[in-house]
Length: 340
Image (cartoon, rainbow, N blue to C red; front, side, top):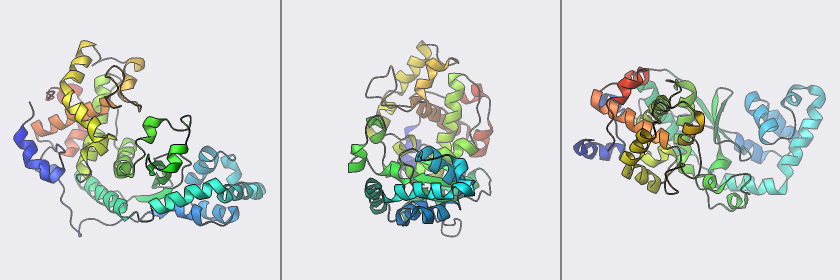
């Protein structure tokens, strides 16, 4: 069983997050982290007076621009952006976009909601300082904000992590309420909260830079995802625990109260070494809840349970974060797990 004394000792420091050992806790002061300022492409879009002006600005970020123009706005092909004979066509399309009366309302809502993003700049900057220390890296990263036309929370392009601010306007925002379910289902609208920004940035970044598959089995997938959640846990100690899983407080409480039940269900249904995607994908997919666990359960229970396994392993072995990430033997990682 998990040691309650350990949790009490670390509650004040890690806001209920179960960390492994002191070597994995990074204390920052003003001398060992550097502020990363975000490039505000969302404001560039909002302030552009014409498609020509916007085109001249966005061409500075070619990967983001291609994605934005062709996949998000869907107003043309990305090849048009580098074809000089199509420049007028492109700028005319962009002019209609920036002048659209509905888009003006959306832009103003984003601008008023995110006029000051210094909190997120600070959180992300500190997170990368901890990431570099924990994993012995020297990563230099850029961050930026943009408008995704309700398509993307976080994406990497042009050596920058871009945050789609429209995806964090809040479930009670009048614009979000008006979006049809075919565009965004209600369960997703309920999670369009800015409290998830910092965790989304790092989960996405770690999935592309650190994540390594451990196998096709259900257990292997849980542990691989669990490693990522564990590192997010360490590098964002000031974030509420539920935010790291895109959960509400009630959803996180449900998982904690039902951990033994979740584990027993997996064992009883012989899922631990199951490879059939149709039987295990539901444990990692976004949705209103996890199938077979009822509507009070959250989605992505497999990620949360994988985190519990890795967290148990870290506490019981006193390994460094780098050692935990490097451990590829799923039996070694499993044998220290005891559902609480």
